[in-house]
Image (tube, one colour):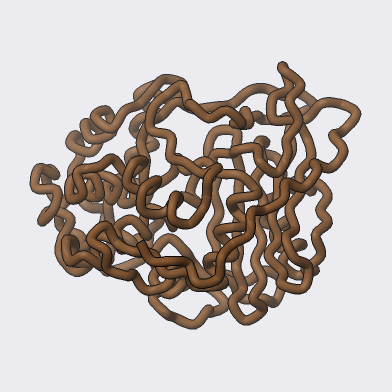
Length: 350
């Protein structure tokens, strides 16, 4: 296993900011700013019924922030020569029905594969509040296995694509994405509070519950869907700070076969310079936060919202994870990134 050249000191758990007088969901955040040192914080409640406060070690569903880790798993198999980015999905998942196997792995990673959506059909079938398995999802796709457009023609964000990439990782490696990622990504990177949940109930001791707050009413909003790849990574502010450090250091990981992968930032961004907007590579895309161009991603699922951004030119990054859907995670991430100051207050969507 390659030794990480610049060792990461264990992150001291920062004291959670004072919880509000009226129990309410909240957020945890991480700021990478070399001038500030380790900077994390939290406020609100992880579980209103049990009166458990959020702290920097509380775990949240990252939703689509997970995609960068799925992409990294695929790239580790590419490093071993077991996956070719320019081969079609069907070369590895031979049983894919209809046209679903036509897009290349690269096109799927970059959301240009034209794959149909699986989420809306499951909701229309009344499965929104029920457990939905991998088999259920494959059945939905098999019922309408037609591409929405010719692969490579245009960008269209696709959860289906990253779900299928999780199936590819399992098929090629012989390990479920959750197991593979723990062994070759989260473990080596020291992300001890990060895991992929692919079975319910989730066996995470510090998991925040998800909520929706509307018209002064708060209700639990959670999902027991078991698909991975497009989501389902759960993590904490402590570990998201570690991840931002790894992006900044461009940490090198070893593939399962012992081959060094290009640094994690180089691999996920394909070594491209950050642009103002419109550049989606492998689980990370470029965008403007105020006037700063950054790599990042948003996530939202059930009662969880998240946003992460890293600006390489500033060697600065920020992430905010919340267990309520009304909180503006992008605005709060922007505030941390631009100010570079480890202080944050709740900001709701207008």
